[in-house]
Length: 263
Image (cartoon, rainbow, N blue to C red; front, side, top):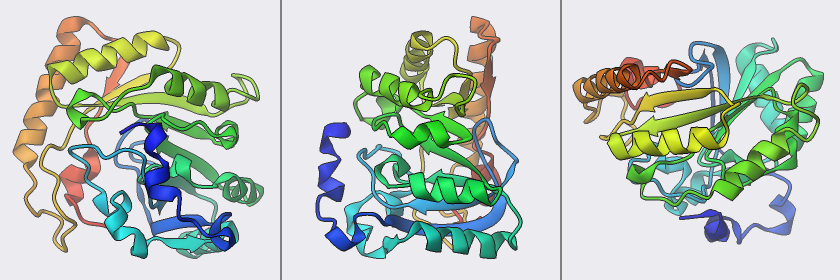
């Protein structure tokens, strides 16, 4: 699925809800479990709706339109109020996630949060560029590889990067490319894309190929041994290829909490 399919998930918005953020869940404080901010305390704001449907998606409850009734249209002010309640009013990193949060009108939330000392990070697949990308503190773009069974649009990725740099490279967000990797084809895809933007730092991480429905104990059906083996393989591949300018990171939250929600 490409950005052209975004209307499949978003074309029935009502006028009253047009400026509201469709929320799947807000939780924390916890720590970021993956990417360049791994280990950093954060509150997650997970939005509902996505223009992709990755074959190994582990957050279908924020992607599949079948869950649409669970996504609550919420004003930016109310979202920030919930974040403050969770953080005890103390400024914290807010991670904007999904689904694809780039679908949502998040510019107002970012502006209000910044005035109160909050910082904002987002992860998006790089299919939809938004002008408020330039107002973020951290932008993680995670192009989806062949194993996801989705299409890659290099022009859309470039547009996302350009949008983030509207205010100038030095004044925009810290940008990272993060690639999920399942196999050798995914690894070659990551190498191809990173060479398109050689000035942007890169993270690689193994794909959880056995995503399960959220479960109270968090461990439902997860192949932790397989995920660990895939991480070891990825380290060996990066070392052999002498890609010493990238970071190889685990999905640490999966190792610790499995598919448990709200952590």
